[in-house]
Length: 364
Ligand code: PLP
Image 1 (cartoon, rainbow, N blue to C red):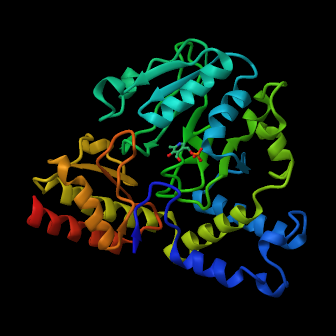
Image 2 (cartoon, rainbow, N blue to C red):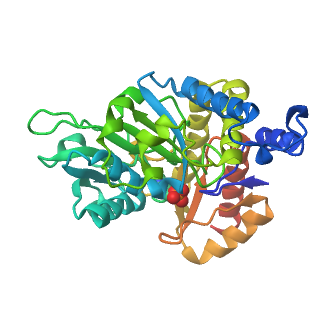
């Protein structure tokens, strides 16, 4: 079976197998990682290795801290403004879909204001705004964007500049939940990166935050302790009991990326081939279509519709019979969506393309 779920998503089989091997008795210690004290030497070694591997994979500069926190990416919709609006100013956003919109709503809910510096809503989110269309507010404190919108399948093809009219460059904040680790990343261009784990990292609930050190003292005084990047950084992400097992599993995924895949350049090449094949199948067909401007097509989430939506349910039933799982589009948009994150092998895309061709020949 191949799992095309948007999240929680497929994990690498090798990672699941290793977790199973180590489940009851971690490396002869006589207990499961789940049962270890987070302060124990064994567990601290697991946590530190995970962080070091992630730092190496993404080439994270030494003036950035990596946090392993909880509450999903959604919690970061609140944590980011709490952490960055201390000195005042307004949160700025580029809106390119549903997740970005939720981040805007949360900032507005908490701080009464949020400035939408650019939006692709009018176009129906089929292409991202261009640099010249981004208008920061004069009091912008930071610019938040969603490099890959998971539901719409819309991805940025460039990194937005963040200079205000007065020349001040504000930090760029990215919700990389659905594309982190799919390709190399220049971390130094960002102020804050965050990602819910359940696509390319590990189990849902865990969140990885990468934050530039000089931003750590911007936090508001009246914010919840557990949201504070500074306090999380000072405590090594262990203010309270961290999500120990999820952190361990994330570490296995980082190890897999480094040693089995061969790093992010190799992952990038595989992801490029996978998405090229799938979009070629869609574009070469009369039955399937994808509305996104080619330059902004996501390599992780590939939504497509059938020319005759009455065929949708047959498509899904037959796909499942062929071992192709979770191809139903998000409930808000309908149609189909194939999420082809890192752990989805190229063979899965080949099987999907073969099924789509066959289905079109029989039913199209
Ligand atoms: N941001 C993006 C881009 C997502 O794809 C998701 C989806 O899960 C979220 C935020 C929300 O994440 P969570 O459910 O972990 O809060």
